[in-house]
Image (cartoon, rainbow, N blue to C red):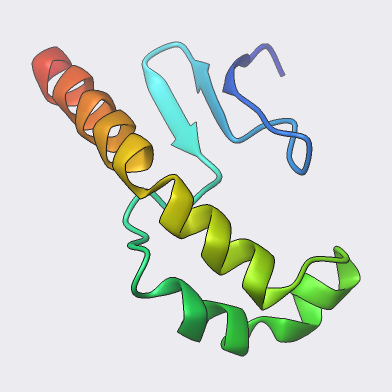
Length: 83
């Protein structure tokens, strides 16, 4: 389709992409570490399918909270500077 990949991970090859001026995100920018446990409970079946545990996800969210917050801030700052 001619889109340019902007972000990817082992689990998802197209987490963010752009086509022309349109940008799409395939992740939850708004997620906060405190919300993650309840999300894991709500989507336990999907975690099991991916062979992930609630403990793994919660630990990763807590361990990376500062970095994620900084990257989210940078992404939003960059976005708002364009509009």
